[in-house]
Length: 96
Image 1 (tube, rainbow, N blue to C red):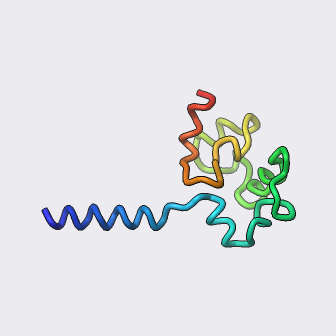
Image 2 (cartoon, rainbow, N blue to C red; image 1 turned 45 degrees about the vertical axis):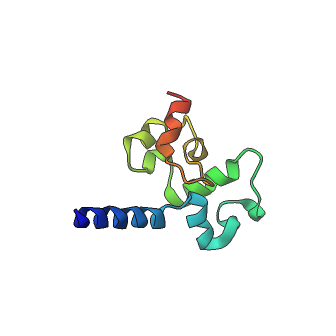
Image 3 (tube, one colour; image 1 turned 135 degrees about the vertical axis):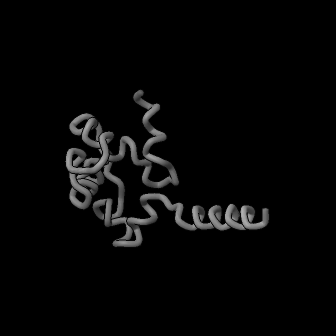
C-alpha cells in the first residue's frame, strides 16, 4: 500500500514539475521575441503563427493526423493556447 501511495505522490510531483505553458517553454529560448515581433503580440496573430511554422514546420509537415487534416483550414493559435497550461485537444470542442 505504501509503495502505491509513494508512486502516486511521485508521479503527481513529476507531472506538476513538467507542466508549463507553451509560452513559458519558448520564453526560455529568447524571451517574448521568440514568438512576438518586438516582444508584443500582433493584432491578427499572423506573425506568431508564422513563427510557429518557421520553427516547427507547416501543419502538413507535422506528425499526427489532426495536423494534416487541418492544414489550410486553421492556424496554430486556433488550437494551442500558448499562455495557459492547456491541451491543444481541449480546443476541438470549439469547432466540432
